[in-house]
Image 1 (tube, one colour):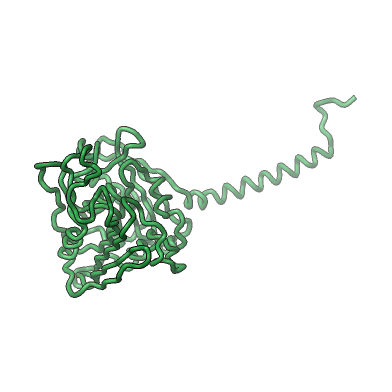
Image 2 (cartoon, helix red, strand yellow; image 1 turned 180 degrees about the vertical axis):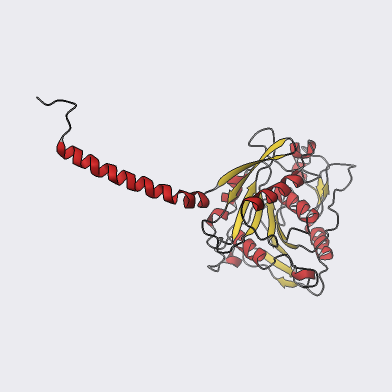
Length: 329
């Protein structure tokens, strides 16, 4: 009769081998864990005044530079950092190891109702006068304290409500922000009928700006004015035109000369570039005829392998070309 607690010599040998393998595997994982952690996404929480705020950090496993650039990417209203990262294509960039990507989180009564306070928009963040400018300041300070970044290459991007805050923060912090990319947003506007226009003060330093906007955008009309789509919910809410935003930045950047004009391609995408601007800055405007209020789709104009047809890849390349320079450069 076999006893249940008596070990089989063959099984003992197998168990011994398994134990050695397990020790080896777990030891290897333990050695690799710092590298794996460095390559993974990580949420960070900070206090801004008496409020806890969060942001998502996506940094390269092995940065190609000792001090990578820092790009803040702001989601739109009713979205979140995870969706912004995926829908914007930032998780699919092939050439990204010289950047640290940070996806801050807006505020709201619930996870599906997160917004930013851009002065004239949007929802609870605007009504409660949330200090999102200080939040973005704190995000940069926190990231810079925990990892090396190139302070001459701090950039901000956003879509919709996120683009509004990108414009606002970039203009207010023009001495620190090297570039802005705004998708489907406006730099200025008013909350409603008989309300004053909210416009950023003139930037203290030139800033490179990349704008992408659809002619048929129903929420922030290309030509400016009141959004008919929001007339019942937000009566009188209005924004300035894309042309006015371009005029704001070309004036602030001291751009001169005739811009480079690329006519519309088969997708209805045209590009105008103002390249003769102070401190090596540039203002570039991408217009698409039909897209509505959305992040750019894969673009034929960016079909070269280095761009992957992703607007996010082109945006990163645009920022690479435009670090913060001294005024006399």
